[in-house]
Length: 162
DNA sequence: GCCAACGTTGGC
DNA sequence: GCCAACGTTGGC
Image 1 (cartoon, chains in turn brown, cyan, purple):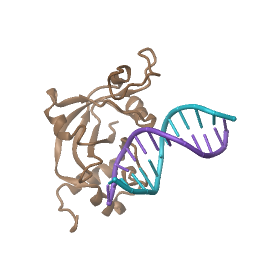
Image 2 (spheres, rainbow, N blue to C red):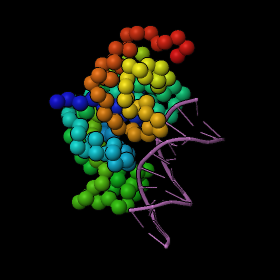
Image 3 (cartoon, rainbow, N blue to C red):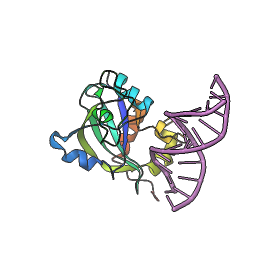
């Protein structure tokens, strides 16, 4: 059973355009250092799952495209590298603490669906984690109903004022 | 730049 | 196990 996800990235660090330009349009989703997010990648993601690519902490926070999960989970190599920004001295190759999956570019949405628009349509997305108060999770599941609802917005125009 | 929300750490 | 301190996230 395929599942749906949402992956956040700050576009100043790694954008959907960056992914699109990578060799093979594929990139290890490294640097995740949150246990809940790790568990989703390590235990729940399947090759072929699809995910929304969300740009966070930028001028217009928005879902901008779709990626697919391109590998099973494996140990995040950046945790072992003291020179890497996400080095974890408590992690060892024998007992890695952090895992990742490879993600593959699928496409841009025909228009970005902004956080403001998603909030304006919250009634149609009951329980959507991205809209939960204080939400900071960078890897989260998306139920099929929400996936379809959001995809259907692509071919509608944004509400006035957004 | 501000600040609320949240997760982690470490002293006790 | 509690909880204060701290660091990070991310919208605004």
